Length: 93
Image (tube, rainbow, N blue to C red; front, side, top):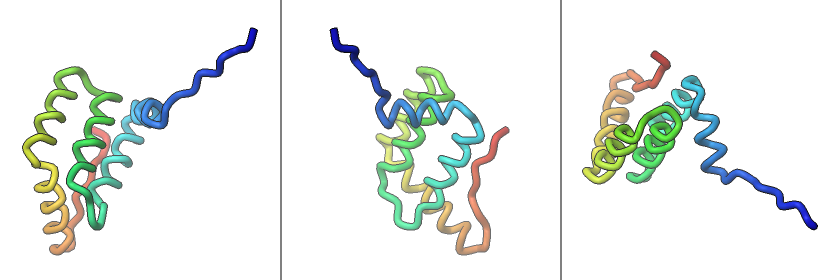
């Protein structure tokens, strides 16, 4: 009988790593610093963090956030702050 090797998907590995709040903060900060972000990127990454650190209600909040195209507003805020010499960051509480 042959043994079956089970491997985690990239997304499973990512979510496991984001269970560390420091990793989650770095991940979100990197997303917010994207120079030319895709509109779907922020909701996707917020969903990863919600899966790692949040509850079902957090995952639902992310779904509504992505549906309303609020993600682009955050990038616009980050860009505006950058033009003023400021930086939007995510840190561990």
